[in-house]
Length: 191
Length: 378
Image 1: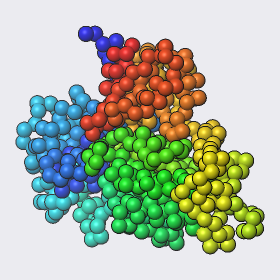
Image 2 (image 1 turned 135 degrees about the vertical axis):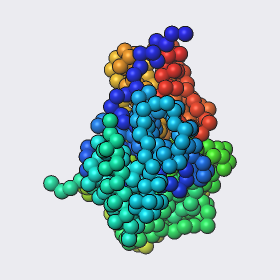
Image 3 (image 1 turned 180 degrees about the horizontal axis):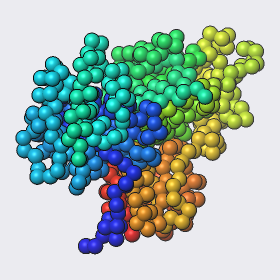
Image 4 (image 1 turned 120 degrees about the horizontal axis):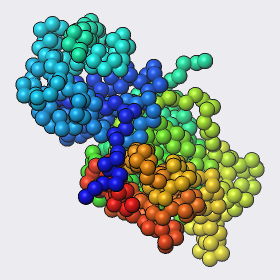
């Protein structure tokens, strides 16, 4: 059946939809909150963040979505992702179908080994966190640095400022270095 | 110019901000998903302002406590979800009858019973209107964004104070748990209404006097005005009555103080309705999908418009009739098996085709689902 409306409809072009996904404990929700604030606090952009909640958020693939627009955001959830960060294989397998054709795919190649045959960015976020920063916990912050560099949605300075507002006392140096590392590695890889 | 106060907040946190802006100084509640952050936020913020937070033994106690606090002069609120709202209904009726302003937030989840704690629903729409027994008019508002939640909470307090009545805020899980960056309003930016207090000497005070607008001035407990409060149908002195002539006066008071002032209460958002042949009617989080679908369908050349109900009760009959009168078709979108659609059917002329799109699987309606329905209806 020919669709009178659906065939003519383009997804709204004024939205940029991102999903940060991994498993519970990898700090995807934390990262999405930091990213939302870094993008929206000092700009006129609209930002909506939402996340897995309840049983969904405990174990298995966990996700947090951030939708950004220069205009009012009507529908609060992601419709078709412009960017997918997958920190585990399970998350990639589960959420890859939601990524737009030519959407930006970023994977943690320390943990993700089977990536669909599409152009994508692969960084060893978890290995970098452990070996170069000295703590596995900051893999999410390295990933945020990479997202900042690859999308240009937020400056490295602004991102660092918001990360440090949220970082537990005593971890400032590690977090600052994590943003720096992710940002620089991504700039080198940027196509 | 002072720097804007922008914050990334969940809907539940914005509800607390709105309540504090409106002057809430008392919160009693019992935690329940997906409303718990309202209690948490109130517990954190109220003591800083000299207010009180109490975690009660259950929802029956919670609603009783806020009624008592309000009689003592405090602006009071509780937050819950469907199961707790069910428990509160008896005393919500008491607040209707005794005309005590309180705000009750129901962050809806799937039901019946304990249902779906973490899943979205709009299945308490009719319960908010008719949940407690008896005849009465009620006010219910339904925000759809985090920013709305702040301003609609201010409005809910204003309506409660203005009309001396319980006001229900129907939130849902999607709005409650989404975070959005919003601007916190400056003091003075929004009107804050306080209940009218008596100016007559205490010995002349009639606690349920029939005034011009049917709302009686309300003193705070301890201000010297001694009066009787009962859930029994009462006369203008507040004492129980069985006289038909006085019963009618009391029940008409409860109805007329709201129904005669619907223009002050009704709030709707209207988009693209000027030349619309089809209208999508919705409220709460569904409105966001409906707005998105409307904008997309307009780009494809479909003459569709969107009506969002911020005030659900009293039902905006006059406005919907005016707006939809020229449409051939209407689509009502809800996260339930059909509740507000019956009101739409009740008021619109028979020659308008009324269609529904409903979802009750714990997920939000998507713009694509609404577009599919639109296509089917065209």
